[in-house]
Image 1 (cartoon, helix red, strand yellow):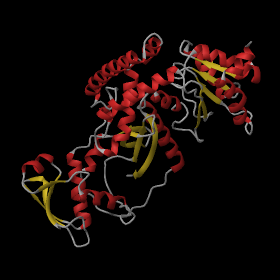
Image 2 (spheres, one colour):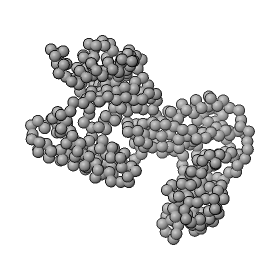
Image 3 (cartoon, helix red, strand yellow):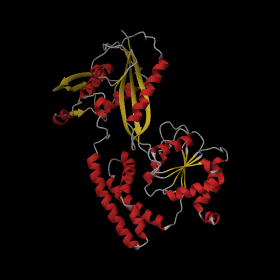
Image 4 (cartoon, helix red, strand yellow):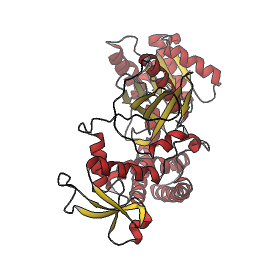
Length: 433
């Protein structure tokens, strides 16, 4: 009876008799992460796979398991005792399998496409060494499929209305809103009642559910639109950069590039004259300010922000090969090592969502301090180029220690929606008495 049922089960037949044999043909022990929506389907797949590969090669994780039991199954999957790990949506929350697996099979496709992206995030994460491969098994032309497509069309219409911002970010915002809106829509109830209602009534119910979800999403976004993190201590140890640092950078670039400047009205507003070798527009003589209020109130003052043509020139020059980097003899009153790093985070779609510049100070005892306050004060001071002899240090051991610390920070500030993307060392300075 089971074999007869399997012949008519196109999805299971495709998985067991076609997909898995093709995957394991060249790599017999290749691990597979299989996602399904329901525990009954999970148990059914376990039975079918066990007939071909043995019960001991199949592992299950689901939401009703204890944390300890789930961790034991994952460990067996990672160390090779289990080859196929079948997970439900709830069971897969919070697991990271990127170290030992790079192939995923979605046996059941979730009605919310953003959940599909979250599944992929179990493998496509910081530390994955191989290309992540995802197979989706789908049975079209079912009644549920047509209803879900109807909801997708309506959600897309609402999302397009809500995502009317600058073209550069429109696609990313569209995906984010789609996922949130789909999560807030009671799709399960609609699917359950669809068989008892006509097509017109189901369409009306869909519109009402999505309208309620849209209103809830708007209120939710208004509440959290300024929140970068839910951690109340997030800003406690960040480097305290201010407009004074912006001012110090601008004045430093004026002097570095030979730009004539004179403060007018306040120390953050200048009349400037560009040398002939700097072309950033038609004018060579104009007035700029890093103070937005001054640029608003004073006549003919341009705000020198990141989009200003001169600021773009400054940043490109500072990053260029011609700048070469400068060495400066400084006195911070301490001995040790200062290292500058940029940490970056992404969402489940691989889009960058956050980055943070920080400074680590390692004292002579090997203790690490993140963003020491005295370094922020030093950044506002003027320094002059000079030559120096680099003290002897164990560079390899130093970098291992720094990398371990940065990796821990990346992990600490990550959450369900913010995933580690990368980290980059910018410069390292040795302070010696």
